[in-house]
Length: 270
Ligand SMILES: [Zn+2]
Image 1 (tube, rainbow, N blue to C red):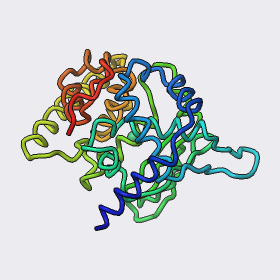
Image 2: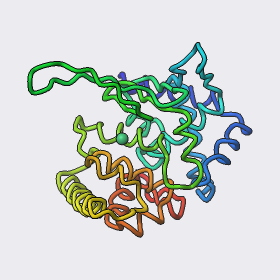
Image 3: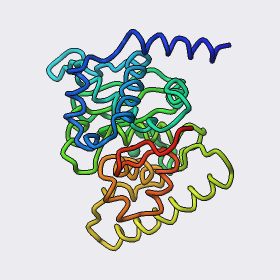
Image 4: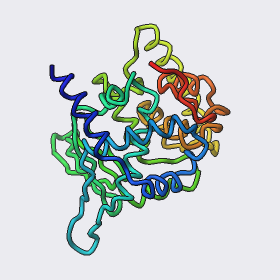
């Protein structure tokens, strides 16, 4: 019953909250990795983006003071469209696809890197507080936090896209584990994905450790969940690079997302 109501609500929201043409065009213009997508894929992306904007609050993390940030409608669409790219090929309908983003509400946008505060205990049992500036963070069952300058820095076709990175973490967390493997339809699919990403991660770490100047952001060597998030960024924002560097990973991501980002097409209807 709850699902039925939710589907109905989403259908109504789609009908009454369409994104204005000029705002949609401006968002696509700002994201060059979307300009070759097929019209049917872009139409579905627009519907998902509409639902995302209705269901999520995209708010400023700094509403007053010297560094206050106003979140404009353009910024909201830019964030939403990139978040929805990850679910573009998922679900039999757009309301089904949105289920991947159920269970949380807020995206908080900051005027710059923001401190991640965490406490840790040293060997002597003394608790220290560490303030470490970061550009983005995803909470399990909670908000996504983004630094706006870091979001904008990715628009130059460099294969970096912070919004995609943080929402890839959300997808990774869907099965309750942060391990670089999103929820899979079967044990065999899970094992195949896991084996592929582990092998690629091991190879990438060895290259970074050897001092190689990798075309993929070396931050991906940090942990396997970061490798997953970074490869998702490259998959969508510079797909030729990922296919060239890690073709097996590319194929696994293509299977999971049901998107061919090089052709700009949805690869199957579910
Ligand atoms: Zn990350």
